[in-house]
Amino acid sequence: MKRQEKLTNFFSTEPGTVAEGDLQTSSTQQDGAESPPIIETLDECDSNASPAVKKPRLAFDPMDIGRFVRKSSSLHAPLTEEERFKALTDCWKPDEHYQFPKVLESTRTRAFQHHYLVKWPWLAYSEMHGGGAFCKYCVLFARETSDQRGPNFLGVLVAKPLNKYKKALDILKNHERCQYHCEAKGKAEKFLDWYNDKVGHDLRNRLLAAREEQVKKNRQGLVPIIRTILLCGKQNIPLRGHRDDGSLSAVDGNNNDGNFRALLRYRLDAGDRLLEEHLNSAKKNATYVSHTFQNEIISTIGKIIRRRIVAEVKVAKFFAVLADESRDVGKTDQLTVCLRYVGGEDNQHVVKEVFLKFSDVEEKTGSGLPAAYSVFFKKKD
Ligand SMILES: [Zn+2]
Image 1 (cartoon, helix red, strand yellow):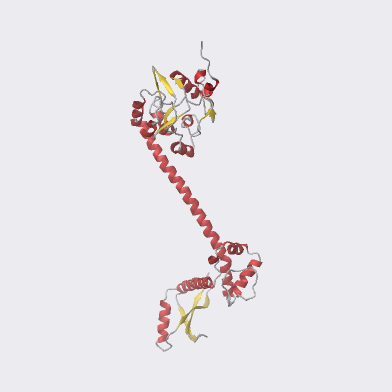
Image 2 (cartoon, protein in one colour; image 1 turned 45 degrees about the vertical axis):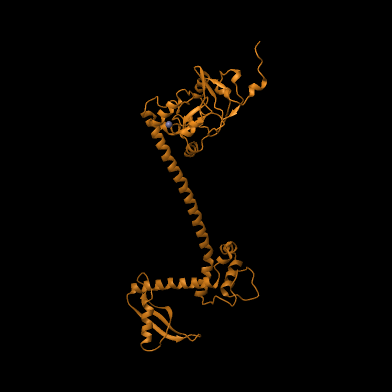
């Protein structure tokens, strides 16, 4: 009497023995499929399998190398760079406890061995196409030279899985030595170098763009402050009061903290968004409204003005020096130096008299003053 099959046998998750003929049938049927669906069943791959070896529904891994076998064919749209990179670096790999399906070859059953994957890093196992091994380098890159190498080279390990294991070691050793594999391996390595460099380059560009954006934003925040200093200079308005340290509040305090800060508040009140955003987002030690920063800006503006004057004087070629010495409120003797020359643009010649700089005088004697002039004009700034 035939033994009754238990119901649970039909849903066993342990891979069973698959006959060699069944695997070939499975592979042939898959050849026609353009793109394997995300979820396939072994029933679909192996329609001739007996009920005893039927498997439950299995979802193939999205990174199973078998998915790229058909995709890398010239009949289909080429793989994207990202797909190739993922397939090369992150393709599915069965763990050490994975039960590879046994294949009946003549009188013996054999199965794929996990240590093959360790010994040949280019090897990848696929559960698709009936189950078997592929060379991921050749699957992804060897087809590009297929026309030059004859019709038969894209066989086992490239177009079809290695699923007969009697001579597996010889096949794998020979494959590793063959020319198209070496070329595909070289292409894969070059591709990885190029892709990693490209990703790194993109990242560097993104960082650079972010930095440039930050620099631009920082500079925009300084514009209202510098314009206010320029306004004070042009209108002869003293900048500072007795208390002009600390953060700038939008509301007037009880103490008069100077014209510069009052003018900045005036800009805020008039709706200067750039200044408002800068003061709100800047760190406390980087608001650039301190008297130290005011002096730096005044000094920088002075250098720029002097450079322009010197450039005009060089064009004019001839100039006169107007100088006098006087004592300031601090009882320091100062030399005032002005220049007189003919300048102008577009043949509009005008006589210009411009102030150049104050300079301290240590000795007001007949020889001391010419020495002070000499030191003054030798200074580069
Ligand atoms: Zn190969």
